[in-house]
Amino acid sequence: AQSVTQLDSQVPVFEEAPVELRCNYSSSVSVYLFWYVQYPNQGLQLLLKYLSGSTLVKGINGFEAEFNKSQTSFHLRKPSVHISDTAEYFCAVTHMNTGFQKLVFGTGTRLLVSP
Amino acid sequence: DVKVTQSSRYLVKRTGEKVFLECVQDMDHENMFWYRQDPGLGLRLIYFSYDVKMKEKGDIPEGYSVSREKKERFSLILESASTNQTSMYLCASRSGLAGGLYEQYFGPGTRLTVT
Image (cartoon, rainbow over all chains, first blue to last red; front, side):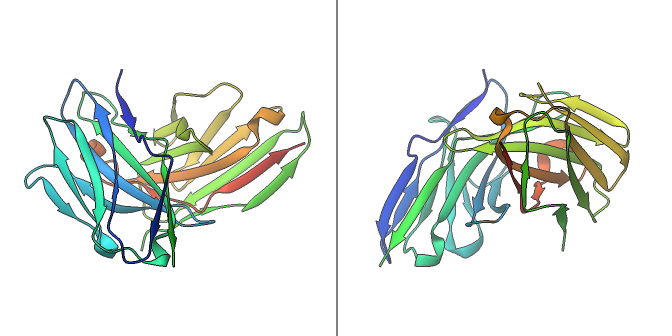
């Protein structure tokens, strides 16, 4: 089965500290990888995506993620978080199989940034 | 800017009522999606449409149907609402070109409560 695992349901962190949100996937074919963010009372918006090429991907708001094929991971990082980064973060994968390509989402990680 | 709008932010319905959730996108996207979002479960795909009048079941279609009569509009229908359909419903659209290469754009969501 093709799936996405976000092991941490909640990550509390202090402002200006670094943070890493973990994402692992399983797939028998090549994948595209995405991180989406959902701020309170809003829909999801794209943070960054990996399609091919460099394994280090930079996104909006200072976030970056690294694709590691051998470990089937796509962890999200930020060196210094702000209060405004408090949100839910979703990792998602599209499997490059034939037919219609759908996004499969992880269960989400709630990032709680406190002063 | 891509805009995906949903007809209601909050909706309260009674058990057994027929419920319509409307979604409109303004980017001429071929693909449209309906998800439900529940705590700890992430986003789960209910139905998607890859063209006008075309629809496909997602992972959890039971109790739902959809309609796509115009390219810009994708409706989710709960034929007889039940309390276990209380959830946040998110609509998304995506360009139909190059499959899963492109990001999905999300609406703000409709929080449906069935009493």
